[in-house]
Image (cartoon, rainbow, N blue to C red; front, side, top):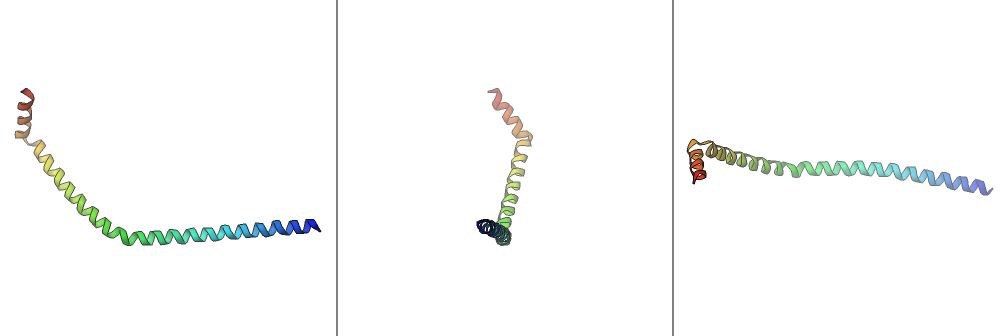
Length: 83
């Protein structure tokens, strides 16, 4: 008789654990969906901002490359190194 109660308790605990595990999986999936849908809206403005900043940085790099590769700049650097 005592073994019957112990067996029933073990089965009940097992069912509760499996149910809790499945509920946790469903909660995690819904949480991931909420996060990705929320990120999509916020990312559009951030992507536009980063694209603008990236374009500005590319322009600055192009300007610096022109300065460094200019023959007058190189000649000036050679003269400074001889001093």
